[in-house]
Image 1 (cartoon, rainbow, N blue to C red):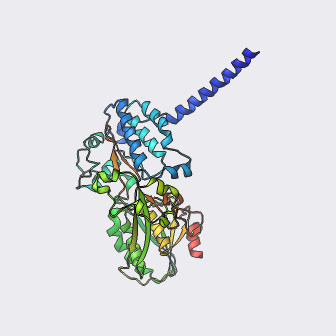
Image 2: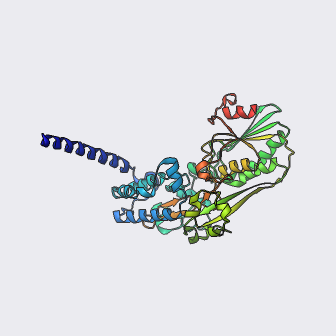
Image 3: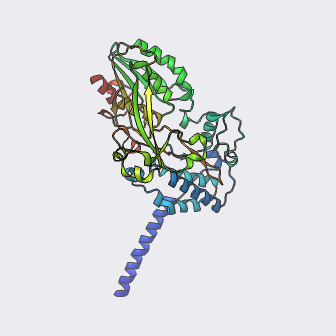
Length: 409
């Protein structure tokens, strides 16, 4: 009887072990296409070389990345404690393509769109953006070899996932929703090469609607780009200079490695007034090394004498520079925000790139903890709209909850 019970317990334990092993294998399994699919060259790295790269990346982020605690609170992911799991993922990769996919999955666990590994198209897009300046990371010899790139930018097309660098697609749409009353602007991207091009279009449209009661600016789905795009629009519509100020905190010393990533006018956190520190989450004082106060200023430069209300439509995809527009519009009083909380990660300093020493793979990672005016972490609480409604866009504006909220306000 005892023997049968023992055998029964053993069977249960074995089944449990097999289930746990199956779950673990599923968590760490890597499936990849051939290397060319990711725009990289196969160099047959050894497991030791792959692990060295992983440890380098892990330490780099451990020392410099700002959102580990935010990731735990929002997504219940303790990235640093997952080290053994990530090691296993690296060890079971059979080639460089699988290693690339493993790194991609590991970084995706951080749930931050600014943090990712470059595929070949993204690498070339950024290389072209910074050219003719020699970017200290992108010009790393092993990186150029990894991405099969000879430095010739003539035939580089820009990756669609990063079209805020430059895109030939139209990013600005305008419309009259209600004649003589409600005007509408849709901005899909703060695209670099549309800043000057769209300036004239914006001016022309705003002159046509300067006597309207309401202007709706729709940035839903806008993942960012360059601040000058949205500042041009604000400048047309204001009579007086608008300002907003934001604290940002940094940790680690990776930024000191390259002039491009250094933070001008930063100060050691010990010099920050204790009363100010008490307004921020405790991790700011405990985990960060230096800070800046960033003043966003927009001056009127082509006054149209617009007296109507401005509404800014936002959703969860509003990120980076578009997020800066959203927070500035709210905090300066420029616009009434409608929709749902944004995606966050308002940044001021250059977002760092880093190459992995053996593979040459290039990663990009957030390295700035932005604070909202209420003392909360921007990446955690985002920017909340004044009027919260379903932010789903609808081609029929009479059925679009955000647009209708602005019309009825």
